[in-house]
Every structure is written in structure tokens, then in C-alpha cells.
Length: 166
Image (cartoon, rainbow, N blue to C red; front, side, top):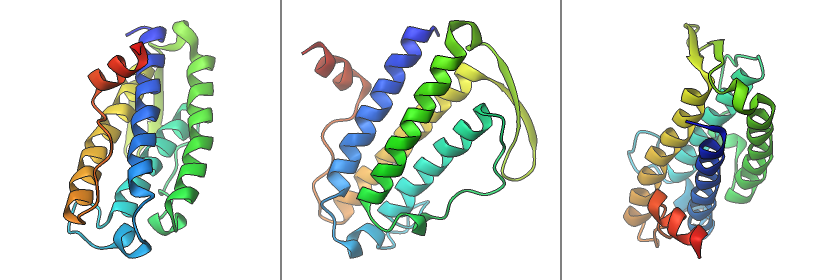
């Protein structure tokens, strides 16, 4: 994967994030935090987990290995989550810019939250962040349907490419 492809993948990731956040902003506080029995209890908890995982990876790319993720209740509502995630987006894009084409194959050593030592190729890690978020966006879409709320606009990668071509 080259730098241009990774930038396009990040553009897709944040485009899809914005679509899911737009859909979830319409939920009541009760709907946002209602336990729906998913892998993360609620829509808010699933979105907070997705954000927190991306934050942990970005921290690792910057030489820090977090020992815990921010708790879901750090984000009382979608606007708070959106603001933090937009800030994180700037940090992720800055890492990719700093790495440049020459840094994509760089192997980064880090420690997982559970204390396990790992090492991974940077572009594999970045691709994982996008894939991980896609998985959880699908869960949020199902949760929205369970709540009787409209799902997000289409978030498939091909939809992104079609949308960007205009």
C-alpha cells in the first residue's frame, strides 16, 4: 500500500465516521446509552470504543503505549465525541504526513493495553484502524435499527469512491 492509497483510506474512514455520527446525533440521551446487549452495551459505548482504539493506536505511533482506554462516559453526548475525534483525526493525519512514503514499512514496537509486547508495520496498523472502525460502524447501524432510528447514509467504501467522483 502506498501513501496516496493510505490517505484515501483515511479520507474514507473519516467520511464514514461523519455519516455514523450524523445518524447518532439524532438519538435521545436514553437511546444513546441504552443497553442493547451488543459487544459494547450501547451506541455511545460502541462509538467511544472505536474512538478509544484509534486513540491508542495513534498514541503508539507517537511512542506512547497507553495502559487504559478512556472510559465511555468521557463522552456524555455525540457532539463531545465528535469534537475529540476531529482533534484525533488531525493527529492521525499528522502522523501519516510525518511518516511519509519512506515510513510506511517502518516497524513500530509497542505494548498492548494488557501488557503484551508487540511490533507491527505502520501501514498494517493504520489499515487495521480503518477496518476495526468499519466493523463497529456496522454494529452501530444494527443498534440504530433496534432503536427504531434511521440508519446512517451508506458507508461502503465503493459508495465513498462514487461520492468523491461526483
